[in-house]
Amino acid sequence: MKYVIGNWKAYKSFSEVQEWLNTFTAHDLASIPQSLKVILCPPAPFLHMCAEKLHQYNISIGSQDISQFEIGPVTGEVTGTQLDGLAEYVIIGHSERRQYFHENDEVLSAKVRSALHHGLKVIFCIDGASDFIPEGVTMVVYEPIDAIGTGRNATVDSVMQMKSQLTHLPHCLYIYGGSVDSSNVTMYMQHDSIDGVLPGTAALNPQEFYELIQESLIS
Ligand code: PGA
Image (spheres, rainbow, N blue to C red):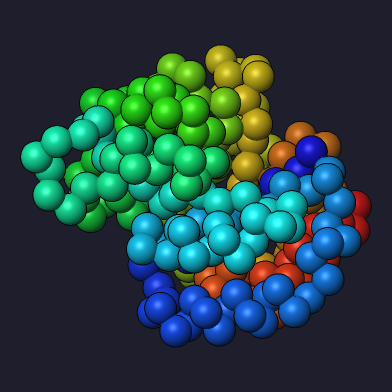
């Protein structure tokens, strides 16, 4: 099984999401084989809308975040209780959350615990081998900061070099993210030891995202 995980970050309005979904679902999504797991991670307000439109296809929904709290007086938070049944996956540890929201190892561990408690599969992002990876994580995404949103995607060699430093995680899926698009995705997907990719920018355009999925199948 290979993975393509689209991360919209905090882009798109309600009408833009409608437009994206209409354009994307006009493609032959039914032909995406079971061997490729496509996961879309929209902003929280659009999770339900995307889930409704995409559930008939082999496409899963992921949340971009989860609260470290279970439930209660934490205004504005989206908790595991609320994501339960709405999303199947959740991104935790993205460098933007670490940088702008100061999420440290303790917070990230609490988020992973909550996600696992609610049966969500964790997509855990790291920037390097020294990043702490909480217990229970089974999918790690290597996202070197200088490759995110810059057009400077990492070489397969450097992605594999990072993997060789994660020997303490023998059973983890290993994903790469950072400026992945339809023109460079094949080299990652062709590699036996890379389980998938996490594109951000390339997922914003439905045509480009579809092409990226198609190119992912050429391996
Ligand atoms: P990018 O973003 O594909 O635009 O580099 C990836 C990510 O940060 O998740």
